[in-house]
Image 1 (spheres, rainbow, N blue to C red):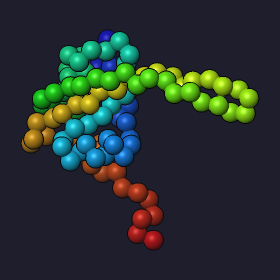
Image 2: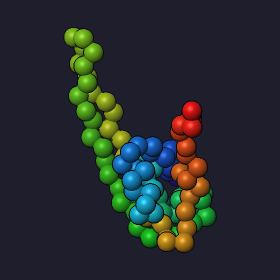
Image 3: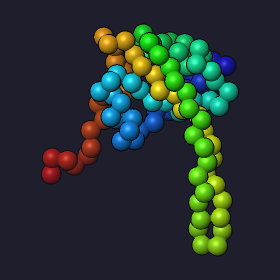
Image 4: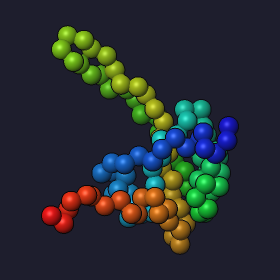
Length: 101
């Protein structure tokens, strides 16, 4: 598995933005990826030093639309803590459009 297939996309949520203060970044990862693969992928793609990796399997939630019922998909995410001197600019430049108006 190469680095680009391990990391699928960053997770953009209120909780992930609150973790940025502690220099922790959240990514959606491949379901079969382990912590070592995630560490190597983040270091290779972004050129940063990783201190800690925590993985979580997000369980499916029940959903209904009228009489039809089902579930969302389960997926896996990783919370990556970086060295204090490193950061990922991908998350830093996110500003809301039209906030000045």
